[in-house]
Image (tube, rainbow, N blue to C red; front, side, top):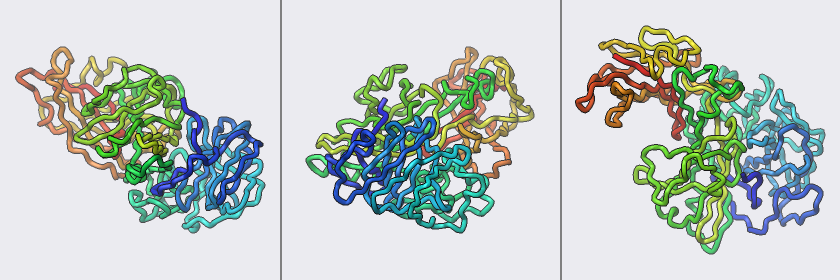
Amino acid sequence: MPRNFKIPLALSLGTLLLLPACFPAPGGTAGTPVDVPTGFITVKGSLSAQGASQILLVETRTNAVIPVPLVNGAFSAQVPAGTYAVAMLDGNNQTNGLLIQDSASLFAIDSATDLGAVSWDAAANTLKTVSALKTVSALNAGVYRLATGGIDLRDMISLNAAAAGGTAIDPSKISGTANVDPDGDLVPTFLDNDNNANGIFDNEEGLELAAASITPGSDSEGIEELRRSRVIVFDNLKLDADQVLSGGGDGDSMPHTEHHVMAFHFPVSAALASRIESVSLHEGPDFADGTIIEQAGGYAFPSGYPARDSAWSATGYKLPLAEQAGHKIYSLWVKPKSDPAPAVITLKVKLTSGTEALLSTRLFYVFNTPAKVTKIADTAITYPIASNGSGTRFNPMSVGSSGDVVFLADRPKTSTDGTIIRGMRVQAQIFYLNAAGAQIGQQMATTEPFVDSGAHDAPLSLTVPRSLLKTTLNDEPVTSYQVDFTMLGRNGDNAAQMFWLKP
């Protein structure tokens, strides 16, 4: 599994950064002298924190992202002068601390800087150092919210901060150097899950983080598209009715590890696809070193798709090229080997010209639970549901033969502290089953999706029209239905709880 960047590149949001291939590695062996390139300065220090693997330097004027490995607890990097935030990554590439000093998280680093011995406050998710740094005021210091209980880099401080009214920032418009810290919570754009403090993860509002660093080859073909490209990574979690919060979990804070599916996508134009030699995972969390899951429907792989249950490592962590709805997209679905978590993920794209690009994004969240259905028609659902309880695969729940069927449900929650995921699309997917429990004709129906924009304490309400609960299909009697209460994200991430019903 790749654990460190092979070539030293600052990863920049919306900014093409052409660096010479001889640029020295950002880490290297601690204490070993290295030549500092002209225009670059040395940043060094040490960190003693259990589980820490890297320091992440985020240059906030260009949104450049520079990972620096810890070597025996020490780090050293050569970086351009700029305004930086400093964070800590654990072994899963998850951000677990942000450097705070004098109520600021942005620091002017314009000369050689020794951060000294950096310490981690796990409860507040912050780092601190006794070294005096040049602080830079946050853009919206007037709504600074660290005092409300620490920096939450795993989920969102915004759930408490939303009472302040949030901001008018549209996350989908954030790019380049604009809006370093729109909501003034001290977390810079690349690390913040909720840049407008409205309680909705930014990826559900259209923010697409794509930090691109490119080393050119023999020509410039494809470079501009690489600079503007998207990397899409998300989690899927679909459970039978009786699996949700049941005793069938693995006993930890992520009870359904074996049911998660991680999706990796890199969409490209046909022109760029013709120039690509390979697309692979360059830097990623340990949990991503898993096994291959079968491809999703609607994707065709002209050159083949890896065998199900084979190790991703056996392919060199490559993503195969697919065709989907007339588009080209490098795609792969992976079963994680351990509990997934929000993380920084980097793909390497190699062109036939020799050009190499490192494209980074963040996995904003993973599901702890899907939406949990609490009522179907007039029947309240209590948990845990027995393995053969009403509404399970072999004991469909009767919903009568007339009238629409209304579902009430709690929203899905994240993997860490149970933050509610809001802003997703809500939809029912209906599958028609015969007396043997097999799907009839591979046909399904869906309700019209709607966006969940309601209050956190209001249950979701989803109506399945009676017209979709057919009694015959293809001249075959419908004996029962599988109805998936599904939450859909903008990028394709989805979670579902599956119930079985009958007339």
